[in-house]
Length: 465
Image 1: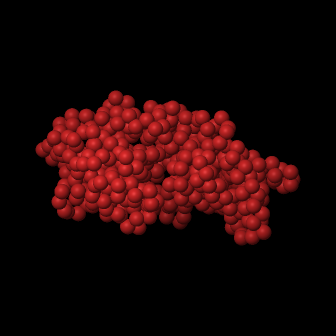
Image 2: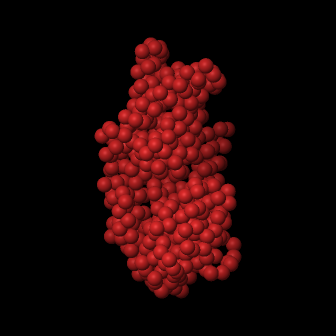
Image 3: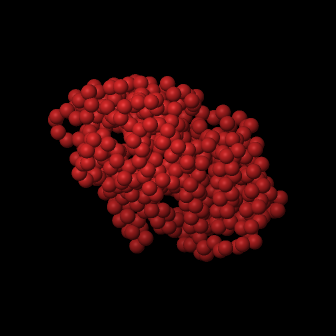
């Protein structure tokens, strides 16, 4: 019954994703090393065109719902992957705005060359880093008819009167700096209530304001911007539920109970993790991993590795005994790890953002995975396998990583993605609880669960040079 329920939920998720584009036609192209997704509305007449630009650690797929919205209004849309993002393997040079402008120039030129596009009617839409890029581009290219900047991080991208037509959208729950930038940029400002830096991309108000501004009119109904994300969420739920029958099949019947709230253990673990993670945050800033070609990824890998190794060493000194798992349970490792990879990669790739490793991301994935696996295994050892106490280790790690960003030890981008990292770590704890119930070896639990966290980090953070 559990497997059947998971299958039905998965089919519902696939239906949502497959039908998200309506009757529009999608094509993937690569022009001058810039990967792009084209979205064409039906009809042989020439349409106005829009280039859509993602933010830092985003991708063309993350912005796919804007392709749905704008194609429904009759626009041909090009969504690009900036250097170092998505399917683009060219490293991003941090702080090099000219690289972003070059990618936009390629995308705009390609859009204008399409036979169903009116080259005199071109607009730009961008989010966060992409908002800065499209605003700066439009300010220097008066032939751009309109610009929509979502969550603009810096008003310096705009100049008085340039771009001529500029809409600034900012989330009501975003940091004050984003609202200040929107107020200073000198365009038409709209606050989208109840959303922050990521959820603003899926707010109906965001899509309606964008489409109406580009149309310079109030148009008809638009497709639901959350459809792809909802489909991805259903797939994630289905695959998470599917872990239970898979564990029963590969590990045998579950005999252990669910983890209990052991408050003394949780308290001791939290204090120990706080000391280990704080020391790791200070050390990670000076380790060679910070030179890995993955923005922020090297620091995260170092912090998690050091924290996990410290917890493991502490548990070893305490001589916590670990019973050997039956051979059958150890043999389940490949199936469980492969299933973890499918669980995280397939839904995100189909319905959210680009997470298929390209180029150097394959070995970077191994490095980041090793860091989170060490953290997970150290937590398993020091907590005796109590998933709730291990979750406390994860919570402390997120708090310390956030504090490191505030202190300037690592990128402030952590402040925007910390909630997403926390969600991934909670999900890992749930996997741990299920696999403990079926008596999986602790090293298998650590490897499979940590992949759920490491995969999106290694495949979405920008490649840098």
